[in-house]
Image (cartoon, rainbow, N blue to C red; front, side, top):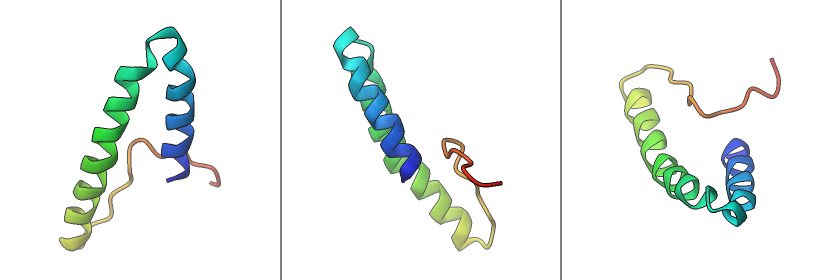
Length: 58
């Protein structure tokens, strides 16, 4: 969720150059689809790393 907040903030800043609006729409769609995929994988017993997540600690 921290990564999504960072992406959302950057997309909001980019709306002033008219490039951020499509990014905000894509981020909203991915914010719904990717957790669903993760939930399906977890239900099947697998581990799934969200491709948009930023690795803060290694």
